[in-house]
Length: 563
Image (cartoon, rainbow, N blue to C red; front, side):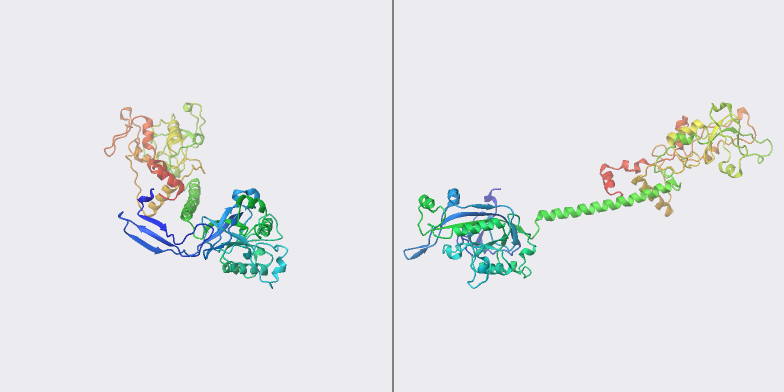
């Protein structure tokens, strides 16, 4: 975006410069130019103040170079301050010291310090201790006598970077107190007996000064720890670049190359590259946290719902295996009976002799225990022709197969008896149970093997649970018979129209086995397969998960408990 399009333009007042190595302590003034109408006449001048300290700095790199400073002088009765004349390291690295420390740096104090472009810079020096301070003798082995002190620096108020060995708690406190009186920007410390490895962590007891960490808040500048070898090397260079121009290393080459004033200074300049870290999380972190919380909540909810549904599926599976729930009779799942299990149902020869005198003398058909020649080699179970009263009262009189509607011929027709007691032609009932339904066409009892259970899905659990709730409330469950061929009928309703007379009928008086239309609905008397379809219990497939839109099926996979 072009800056001229913005209605707000910001500029800094030139009365408070901030360029160069000198950073004066002043309150800068910002001019906010507001030109909403493009006339340039509306201006608002507000004083700028540094915001509250909510940041801390972490040191990333240390760079040491050698600079040539001019000596302050007098001209026409006015003092001319010292200025930087040359960066000798950048111009002639062969005749000047330079060092870069990029790794193994530990930030000890995170006190906030204003930085320009992420760089803290200043003249490197060693803080002065009092003459009677016992640390003078303790630090003598580590600090050369001619190391650069504040008295060896140009008199101009440059920013300073302090360097001191971390000898013990008392000496370190003394160096910190001395540096606090100087225009210091940061302090570098090192363990004199250490090595090139990473200094100890900030919470290590090696940095404990016995005041519970109060020294970090008392000194308003950051403190960084560097490797011992780097600290010793920097201290040695401070001893080399502390005298006048004729005493520094490569003085002849410097004087012949740049022709400086003999009173000028050649000193070590240190630049610290820092990263300003905010204690307040950025916006993207808040967004990530919120997204993380949402993911955790969704994941936990989904896991909990999956566990609940898993328990419900296991409970329904146990009830189905015990025979307490008939999934197909409830219209939940279409099932078929394994053909091997169908073959275990017994076969008989239909045997029924109609009574000649008293209607109450003999009422029920009998199954002959003899093998019939019309059985086509099929083994027929032998059973007594006398049935007990309980079974007789259960099945009543069955003169015909309700699947094909053909009459049974006494002592000729082979029949298959189901566990519920109803009888059918083997070819009719075998096809019906193995291909269309697992229920008896007459009483709708399940013919599945004991302990058999299909794969239970969440959809089946939901529908069975809803059915139980409706039944507990006393509600009547209606099935939409218009969806496909959905006609519920029992064997009794079909047989009432086809019961044989008690006396033997004459051929011309044979009963018409064709089913009559009921309720204005057209009769489905086509083929035997059509009749089978009419006897199948309706299952509403549109109520399953497969009938739902894709997004609902996906949501149900993640949250199986939702409807």
